[in-house]
Amino acid sequence: MIEIIQQFFREIADSYPTWNFIFFYDELQWSKIVGGLWMTVKLSVVCVILSVVIGVAGAAMQGSPNKVLRKIVAGYIQFFRNTPPFVQLLFFYFALGQFTPTYSPDGWLEIPIISNVGWAIISLSFFAGAFNVEIFRAGIEAVPHSTQEAASALGFKRLQIYRYIVFPLALRVSIPALNNNLVNLVKTTTQAFVIAVPELLYQSITIWNDYPSAQNPMMVVLFISYLTLVGFVVIGMNRWDRSMRIPGYGG
Image 1 (cartoon, rainbow, N blue to C red):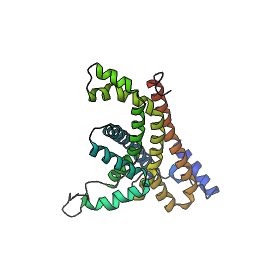
Image 2: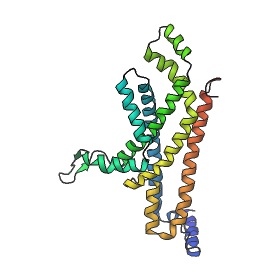
Image 3: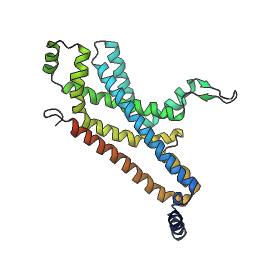
Image 4: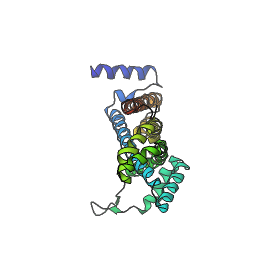
């Protein structure tokens, strides 16, 4: 069956030279597609999780009585929201990367302790996290102050009020906006190719550089892959939103 499929796509390549689906009959090119897609998925999942953690922590620090801490968070938000993620990737990898400690497993080659994948995760997570901070801050502000006062009157401490009352309600309010930001983050992972992270776009470029006739098919693969990946994120976030929705909070 596999041989029949491979032969079918070989015939398409012979008949239509600009539509060479080489990755369907060349094992090496297929492995590039699979590896690139898997890297894209891992990069997206890790960045989504870290950006949400950063958003929650940053929103909590914004409500801190410590003025210095609040200013640090405000500066972080301004820096990452007002500069392009593409430039941030270059800055992290080429500028900060110069100061990264290295190790030598064989006594000759010096390898940075943070790889290009690591810098992509750090940069993209901080970028999306800056928006998540504002999303969660807005959610926290949507929780009625009277609710917090009632919790305080019942003997809850400040941290307990945030953990058990404010944050759960704020999360429900924040999910729709969080959905949009996480979708944008998944799409922004394509920019990691600029620092040679072997995600799907990077692997696609290597394939059509070697086989220009495969450019059109690779563009189709990119389109379908990201449409599917983003679709899973949207469906998952919408289901999460419905499962956590409380009448009067978040619609």
